[in-house]
Image (cartoon, rainbow, N blue to C red; front, top):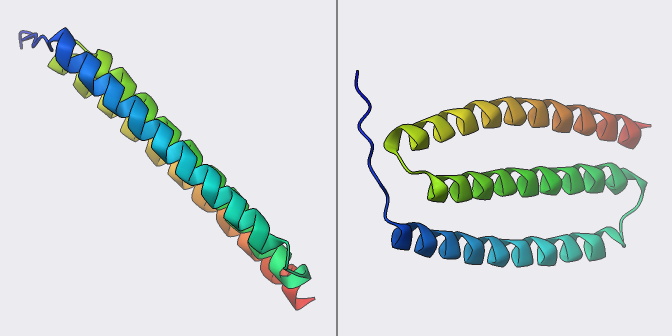
Length: 121
């Protein structure tokens, strides 16, 4: 099947890149504020809640990692010059994200089990 290039105008790519950067900055500020709120809330917890706080911190770290990965994809898509390149970037991203989400789920599950064990005894 022959390749059919579809050139994306530089102005559109520049405008999209600027929008992605602005959204990324806003999200980073939101996540920073969320981390500060979590840290303040953790100050009043005791041993049973320490495990939950650890899980919360790790979950937030995973959210940040996944969001950063999404912004990386967006920035790479902005630079793409053909539909084929866009499709390849998306395929690579989704495969990597599925692997990361599986690993993150296992990690959080193990952390929750340890926290439950500490709370019992």
